[in-house]
Length: 166
Image 1: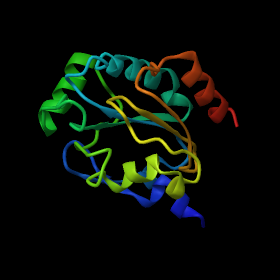
Image 2: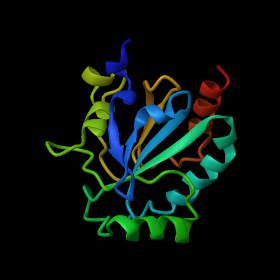
Image 3: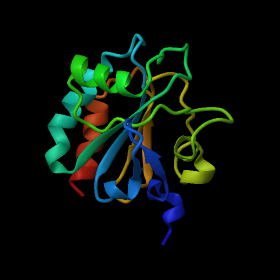
């Protein structure tokens, strides 16, 4: 089925520790982002929510994966992260358990997202918080965006709209 080139092979834990199969997102366009609450780019959480609100009814989801891999900028854990994202930034998109996104401790999902040998399309290991991966309805990685690219940039919106319109 070629499932080995899709993110649907992975199961992750949500912020409450509940197991979630990424197959639950089949048929949706996804923006997968490694987040942090104490980063200069943390206001992107608000942009992520705005993007999510713009496209959620058309089959789009933002998946946030908190990570402390860069500059110790995610000191919070579980419930604290959830409260921070939901209260301060009114995040309604799914937030997952804190993960490692690079190096030998990278979770299988982020290892897959960042290695072309695994995903068939992009070679891009997160270099900082708020690295973004765009995934199509079939779970295939189609693009990535560096930290400095705002989630609501026209570049990202155009790519999402193109995927949603096909």
